[in-house]
Image 1 (cartoon, one colour):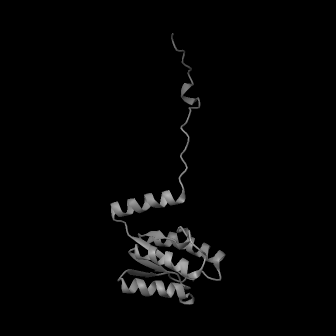
Image 2 (cartoon, one colour):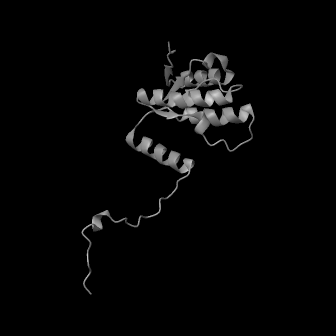
Image 3 (cartoon, helix red, strand yellow):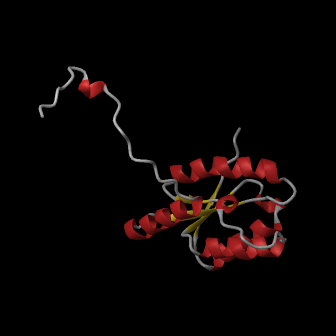
Length: 138
């Protein structure tokens, strides 16, 4: 049988393969593997969260872009897998583990108002990590 072709066959819609949806955890695992393979440095974002959770999320998200501008892959504590009870201690344990896997810490301008961020900076200093301070916007 001879197939008849249309002059506009190239414009006809093609059947596409369904997109595979990945979970945020799977995406983060791929990023971590790529980072370790290519030697890209990562920076943990630290600042005040307790008592200002909604505003803090926005500040941390904005800080991700700033960290990228410094050439580091940002590690945002809001985007970590917090599969634990919601106590301050549980969050700190999880966040400190993530911090210890980073090469640097990025301190938001409000870090002095946070006991947790103060602890994270102390750990980073003892581990001789790079410390980057956010500049105040004028």
